Length: 83
Image 1 (spheres, rainbow, N blue to C red):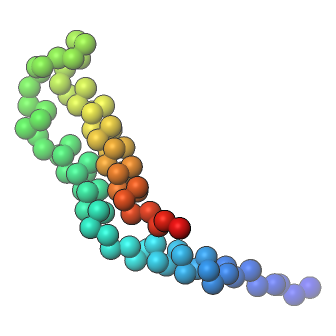
Image 2 (image 1 turned 45 degrees about the vertical axis):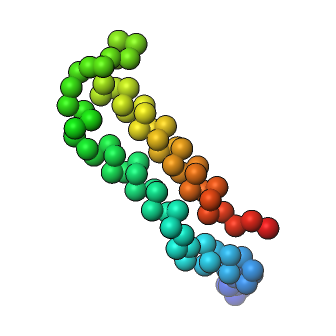
């Protein structure tokens, strides 16, 4: 019994994947915001203000998650291929 070659992806799929990998949209630079902003120690230096009794560090973590989701959603919407 001979081993068969795996099916190669059709050229249309290969073209789409390679064009997506070469996306050089300036919108992609916004993805640095949720990476850099949480690394700024000035934001964590303090206990107040408290939100619902939680110190600043804890509610900032939730805020950073929301910032990451919002930024990723914006970049996706602005860079997706239409049509």
